[in-house]
Figure 1 (spheres, rainbow, N blue to C red):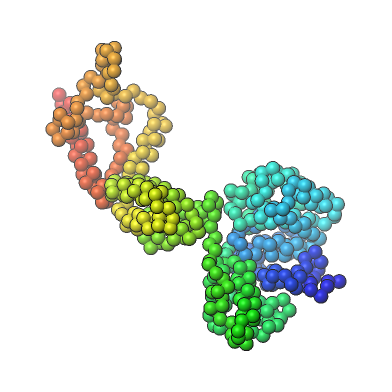
Figure 2 (cartoon, rainbow, N blue to C red; figure 1 turned 30 degrees about the horizontal axis):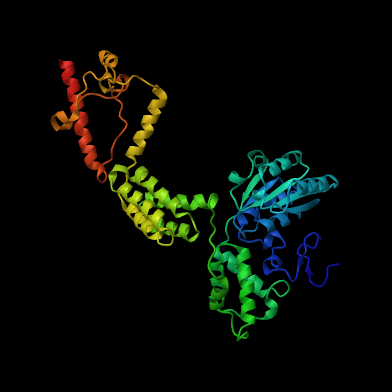
Length: 452
């Protein structure tokens, strides 16, 4: 029998009880799939996963989603599949010994064992390798929960034997439903206190929670506790109390994994789309999350050459000066030149012609190997080399009219290849016009040579 402080969230599963003194987020966990809202595409009626559960079938799964999106809740609901038991482990605490003990326990039962490993991305390669043969043999059905992209953190052989279920951050509308449930629930929630709430109180909590149900319920619980201990507990709970309790927003970000790449990619692609508003927003996201400012400055350097190039020759010097300024200033002042460079580059004319020219040339090198360099371009550093014709016919450009030499400089078999095709945007339009003149002069020289 459960004691007076325990709640059976899964009455048919005595392995899953939550103490009435537990945090509100634990007490309010959904007890069935119908109570789990916000992930209807994953567990709603008609979903593939729901169908497998109802049919008593369940493959090994990697549950991937941000904090508070329902990964642990989903794991315990999946344990409700008939003839199934669950072995929960935390990768923070568990090692090879604990994994082997869980597998051995699975061997001793006739029930299907769900081996639930929370934060599976924290298992090292050796620990994941221990799991592989038991998952492959069906001794255990793996349920791994992770906030990290499993492509980066789960070994390929293990990942290939699992289905990845992606959970999304909860919308503010969904969080409002969860918060209202908690406020009204007398048995598990805060309904027993009989409190009222200002119209903007729960929306303020939903906004501050960043799609995280656990954080939302934690803020609600702390807000109610602060209100009840305040000077006027009979008044409505206010949004001001929420702001005092919630403190500074903690952004979902990391230095070298999924969210790092997502935000950095959005930053670059917003500049590429000539959208300075979006670019400076993602810059602010990275700064607020503690991203290395030199990492951001390096991205600006790359962008200045790859995406702007000769359309605005001032872009690269500006980006380089920004890198030097960031290196010398440090944060928080470094954010100022970062913002200047970001907005300038986002509004600059675009050309990736130089970048594409290099790509074409590299492809040509790959296909053609090392054809001989024309003799007139070779340097005769010895008498023998001079006797062999090295440098013969070389014309010094500054001695020519307009400093243009009509000679071809590519290897003979590549004479008519064209790699650089400048755009008509920004300063590169002038380059394009000059290049047309250069190429026309060479073509005319070729025709003259043929006539002669």
